[in-house]
Image (cartoon, rainbow, N blue to C red; front, top):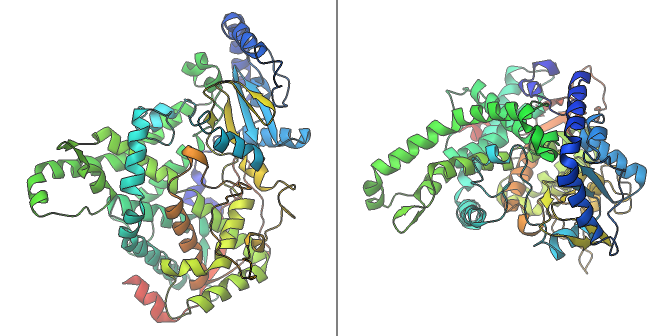
Amino acid sequence: MANKNPFSNITTLMLDFSTSHLTKILHLLVTVLFAFAIKYGLHAHRKRSSLSASAPLPPGPAPWPIVGCLPKLLFNKPAFRWILSLMKEMNTEIVCIRLGNVNVISIASPELAREFFIKQDSVFASRPIVMGTKCLTRGFLTCGLVPPGDQWKKMKRVLTSELISPVVHKWLLQKRNEEANNLVSFLYSQCMKNSVNGGAVVDVRLVTRHYVSNVIRKMVFNQRYFGEGRKDGGPGLEELEHVNSIFTILSLYYSFCVSDFLPCLRWFDFEGHEKLLNKTMRVIDKYHDPIIEERIQQWRDRKDEIMMQNKEPADLLDVLISLEVDGKPLLSTEEIKAQISELFQAGIDNPPNMFEWVVAEMINQPDVLRKAVEEIDTVVGKDCLVQESDLPRLNYVKACAKEAFRLHPLSSSNLPHISNSDTIVGGYFIPKDSHVMVNRYALRRNPRLWDEPLKFKPERHFRTDQGGSVTTVDLAEPDLKFILFGVGRRACPGIQLGSVISIMLLARLLQAFDWSAPPNAPSMIDLSESINSHAMAKPLFVHAKPRLPLHVYTTAKL
């Protein structure tokens, strides 16, 4: 059944190298060895020796001359699992792996994270420029992946003030509600059309990715479909291709390309990552660019009419086009295209992964599922659907989402930071140009920080006030015991939007449907992970059965 899932065709990019590719790469590494020896080897030695008396490098595997640990990495793909195994074997919360001339530092400690990204935030506020940076940002035009500078400041102001501010968040409520209603209506239609024991076996990954992409598409373009769509509210072929492409892009964000650490080899593109990235970005442009270009032309042609009528923007694309400074557009067409692409990339991956894992864990632990549903029934009832205004009171539901984010992060590490100078952190020497990453997976399963770290326990996120009452649960983690939205000046500014989309997805589907293992399948869900990410190894197919009065579903369809 899983083979029928359109999302299962996403290209896996962390596969083991073939022997021929490895042979070619190692041959070239040897060829360039002497060329790099003077330029990089001696320079690194001088830089290191100047601070050698102050502090050691963090622990890590012994590097080879010039190429560092690249050969070990190539034979131990995917890289993130090799790094996890190194940290476990060395029993350390910080590891330094030299790849080429770059020190890649992975940490799994809230104390170190605080020192890196709060105490010394100014030193680690930049991003490394890697294989995909220029392509993904259309020439360094956005703020998420680019180094600090005037362009970064400009786009960050636009993002925080014009796109995801509290005022804009409130303005977009109706669009989010439309897609939350469509989610329930679409799944209900699947249950009625393919009824099995009063419900239907559904592809959770497809349904949830469709919902999140719909929310972003509605907020950005004020439309659900790129093509004609489907009458039942489900995704069409265009939407499937679009979402598949975004997830392919996300898998290439920081994929440990050899050329990121030995730039002279970029031309060879051994892993094929650059070719795939360019191809995938063309798919995204195929859907985005015509809409953006047509809308910009409409605004130019009707600018006087729009201003006279004091017409309000219909979506975030209108907002970006309408921004002006001294009577001229603030943003170029390329900047608008780049920013919209980044909005899709930033918001689409975590909520579906969270829901897939939550439902699997809940089916395996029926008491957790029962408590979450009982909370929703108590707070909201069964005669109307959960609304965003109900979310502050759904603490157990939020704790379930938070626990899924803790135990099952989609990606192993956050986006890397790069140091702009030599410094000392946690008693270790951190050289300039080091790539520093929080190892989300190791941090969130660190036994020093979490009791029974491998067990799904939502109650661990409850906090009580002096009177013994449970305080409001949210997805932020001020203690940095796990970092969901980043920290410091590179923290994700979309915490409010990301939290609402995630909790609404979970609350709506738990309220509207009973969830169980498919008929004639094992009652326990297999919780195995994919080899190439921390997503479930196979898309989750489970049985969904409507549990609310009929009028609730018919109202959602309107």
